[in-house]
Image (cartoon, rainbow, N blue to C red):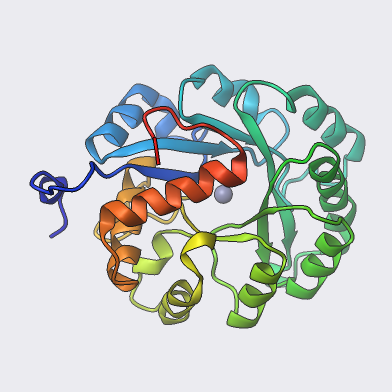
Length: 272
Ligand SMILES: [Zn+2]
């Protein structure tokens, strides 16, 4: 049984996790956002990035603005407005440059169950163009479209980003690392059938790894099946630290530093 009491007697620095990907606008989190922040504290989670999936998401989540809460602005490939290029552009323009809006996403390509990729190309491309122009990292959602995604990203020289909630192949992971990108792992890594994900997490070098919840989805064990929240990134981090045979506090520090460096932010109460 994993519980936060385990952390108490450590002689090393306090553990400080950062959740690189959650959706605070989703229920049930949005029903009691103060509780979400309180639970983060209890689980030693000192920061989180709330990710936009559709036009207007940030109108809601930005009202939660505080230290160590960052935002990504973008439109998901399966969103019904992914072909409204003008609307996407005005959404991005409205938010880029505002305090703590530090990245573009989540955006990308999703070919799951025969989804029409062609409908998604222009919407992804414009978000890549904005990330490139504004020198902002991109939060990539990518499923069953690896070659197309890599080809589109490569059109934009020097763009940086995160392959989020990684469940792809080892081959694609290597391509992502070759781009200089980070790979982020969610609670899926704690699932019994996730052997390939675990193998890839072991392979990804420490300076390229991030952790996330993708809350409210994908709660890690021992909360699998329940609603997820940023506090539970502590379980993901603890799990991967054990997998990679590294001290938890050190792993928290490394992933936190990776996040801050990529997002070009200073993390309050995070001095690593
Ligand atoms: Zn997400």
